[in-house]
Image (tube, rainbow, N blue to C red; front, side, top):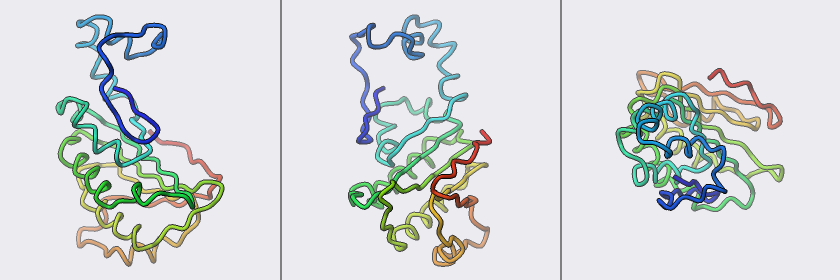
Amino acid sequence: MVAFRDGTVQRENKKWEWHRRSGSITGLLRSCRTVYSEAIGILYTKNILQVRQARTIVEFPLVMRHHRLATIRKLHLDTRLSPNWDIEHWSINKWNGALHVVKTYMQGLQHFRVSFGVTHEGAAVHDEELVALIRNLSYVKHVRDFVIEFHWWREVDELLVRVGRPPEGFPFRVEVHDILDQPGRPW
């Protein structure tokens, strides 16, 4: 599987280009069916799958076997916003599609981190969009360690009040960091 900068993913061509793949863990997995069958679980259960766009998650079921999606344990959606941020990236439908994939196919997910950061130019993020997005993130309830983090200072309490606290509470915790602060990952 190849993930591109624009968020799209596609299956790799079966014809291998060994000179481009030397040292790749996927090369080892493709070298022998026995090695693959014994080791593929490690790829999904022991690594953090990090993506930049919700669109990438939406396309996972198209390029990955569904039972493999269920073995993913750690997912980090790390989004950077800028003044040039295209509304295409902020499409609530794309985010809802990504959340549908997480809820439907990733039942083994144990750690889910959604990070919002800004580029050095700053970002004009409309609270209405964040409120809608966070409200929809509230429906992901099966993940035991679920974090939403902001890498720019903002008043989160007011934002969460606008989201509307569910009776059972939010299924996530919220962290706010200075734009330059990169917290250590507990996982």
